[in-house]
Length: 204
Image (tube, one colour):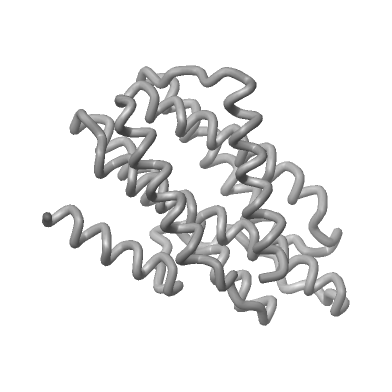
């Protein structure tokens, strides 16, 4: 019951935008003089990345709640704390771009939490494998966004580059801890599901 109450509080803070980073914002470059179309495009990309971090929090919360071993639960919680940094950084950058997060946060949080919990019910090996498969997709997604950002938007680029480094490490650590390697068809289905989020939250 205590874990459920703590999880509910964490969910509220996640979707309400009340997140605080433990690490400083990895963006030293001064704000660029972006055109209106460039600003809107950068905001759309950062909105998508913010929602990805909302989903990451939900996935980790669902997996940690149903984890079978304390060691795996601790590893999931540790990764989630770094994902909170990502969430706060994206929120900060959205404010700098005079933009708001997606209004679909509660919907995607709920769906992601259920997916994380369901995966954890298959066992810790499957749960850790799901972390690696998810982080692999996230790294691909971030690589794409790093290319699509306006050329002068170094602040957003610095944030996404640090996020990518963290995500790659989370995936590698999950495999090292015994995670199963998901087959390509499963990753393909996961990619299709992720595209639903990316295409809707760019604008909403």
